Structure formats: structure tokens, C-alpha cells
Image 1 (spheres, rainbow, N blue to C red):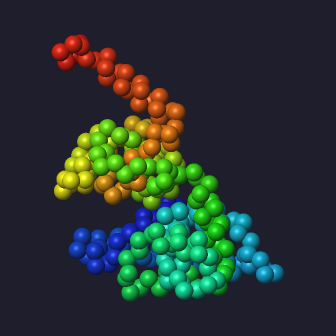
Image 2: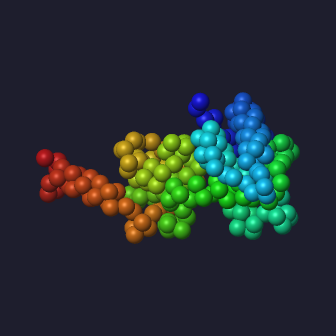
Image 3: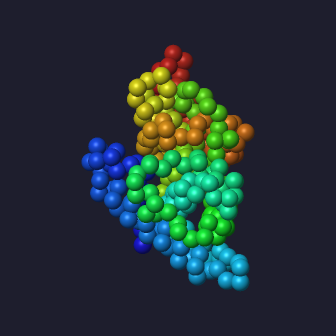
Length: 237
């Protein structure tokens, strides 16, 4: 079964954009995800121990985007609960979740301590992907002609890997933070697919030291190919 897309904006924003159906579908799946987490915790808790083996099935069913969203929502709403680790609270604060009145509908209603343990396991699986983070990037203003890292949440589940985060920006008003436009055009270094994203979809410009060798070699080859097509005076051969 294909995973359903996560809608990240509020109901009021969805109404303005004519996307209420998308919001509603995502809301229903959020609730289903929360109930599935509750069922998992209930069925895997025994002898004062939570066995998190099998969490991969939930990850495959709902995807990291939705699981992280539902867990972040739950922990944000339990901010004052001392049974949830501060590290997980800090993680949850980094996720923007619209303050709709129905957020409690997809809050995980399991014991907070067990929810905390479940979150630990999901985050462990997420961290194992080795994705680029903000710490791997610089906040340079101009994006054009640079290797950028997409936010993992922008990518579909099957493409959430460091290789598919790498995007080479070629043009677009979004490359320049002083411009009104937000579109950044370019292509994925992994497979050369040309597309565009919004400036806010990126973590920033990847520091050279974190760009993998395969990507550096590809960029060097492309630069070499382009130079071969140019002669003195800029006339093409």
C-alpha cells in the first residue's frame, strides 16, 4: 500500500488554498497512525519492558514523515510531563505543527514513558539513515551554482537518503534571498532529474568537506564537459 502524503499546513491555510481535501486525508491518516502506535505499544509491553522489535513495519506503513510528525505533536502537547526525556522534547520543538483545535485527535494516548521509549527507537532508525542536517551546511545567501541539501521531510520515504538530498541549484529567484520569488531550479546530483523547490525546502549550502567524493567527481566532470564546448571568445565549436 502506498503511503499517503503528509499535509503540513493548518485547516485555515488549506481552506485559503483550496486544499481542504488534502488536509482532511492527511488528518485522517495522522489519527490512524497515532492509534497504530498505541496498539503497537500495548501489544509489545510486557514484564515492565517495551519491546520495539517490529517498529520497521510501522515505518514502512506510514513513513518517517508522518511518524515523526505524530510523535512530535504528542511530545509538544506533553511538554510539562517529566516522564519524557528532555532530548526528545528538544527534538519535537524543531517540528512546526499548526495549532489546530483538533491536534489532540492524533496525540498518542499511551503511557508517556512508553511513548518516550518508542520515540527513542524511531529516532534511532531515522538517525541510521545518515541524512544531512543543518550542521552540515552553511547559511550562504546565494544558492546559484552551489550544492544544496534538501530537508529530509521534503522527500518521499523511498528517497530519504543523503544522496537524494543533494541538489545543484542553477537558477531561480529563490537563489537570491533579497528577491521576492522563492523558486530554486536545478537538478538532483544522484540522477540528474531537473525540477524546482522553494528556498525554504533547503537546509542550506553543503560544506565542501561533507560533499561525498562521487558528487565532487560528477561536478568536476560536468565542469570539464562544459569547458570543452567553449573556445576563445566564447564561440562554441
